[in-house]
Image (cartoon, rainbow, N blue to C red; front, top):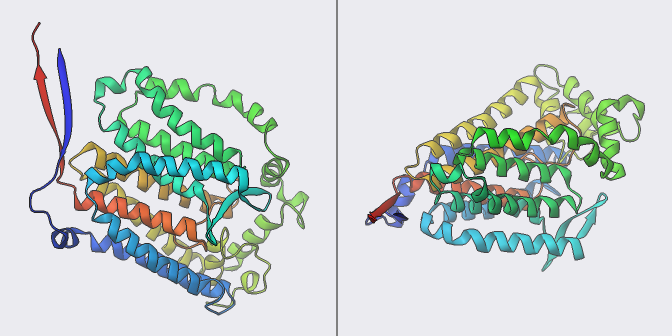
Length: 385
């Protein structure tokens, strides 16, 4: 009979000063550079003024920076203990949204607490990554091959997905599902189990489509034929494509984009912020922003793979893929590759909840790097029959 016990063993004499020295400040610099691009984009979205977007965004970033560095100093032992409380808090906030949420653009996605507007689905993404990482690091390869052991974590993913779908927020629900699937795969879920899950997906499309709201069906129809309603449902994506094309190779110049400055471009400070950047800075500026996003993603994966413990690897991969899905969905949306879904570009789009939760996630990722040499020691006692 075999007994396994996995413990987190911290490095001795590992004080705050040592932790600050071990922070990957180059990676922090990339995050700050992305936020700076967001500040100048918001300044342009405000018509060449710090209000109403740029200055509030800067204040939120400063708060987020403090949160990021503070979280980066937390050891893995504490992060594991925070997993369930954060997940429970996120679930309660999602339930509160359904009962007393703030309605915006046909959906209840926000809740106002003490005058502060919060989008709980953003917190759920990070808390789910933390919870699944703390769950799976205790499981070995053999246990991951047992489907029964995957039932509870699968339920932990489905609960927030269903709650977010009720808001309704299809885009965010899909991202939460993708994040969960990514961690399952990274933890060692067998390929045949993944295939069994994917096989019925095509057959579910019609059922899911029939249960979509009218505006969600309109988004799909508009995605396929935006020219059918150029002044209605197709307006957003048509204007986005016009702005992208008008930027040319080098752009129309900062603060001189016609679609953005003349307010033809809708939601230019949030969903379509990249379109405005590409219009003003052209193809060259757009590629530079995408290159920076890729550097952050690749850097996050490198940090994850260098961790000496499974918890750090899973946590790093989950946080990095959350950022990647954010970027991939937003960029695909504004380019017309997928239906418009209201997903912001992290660190660049205007918004408090998304910015603060993304920076909280970066803090977790940097914590993985700072404590990369902490290992999960295994004590194995064998009892002979």
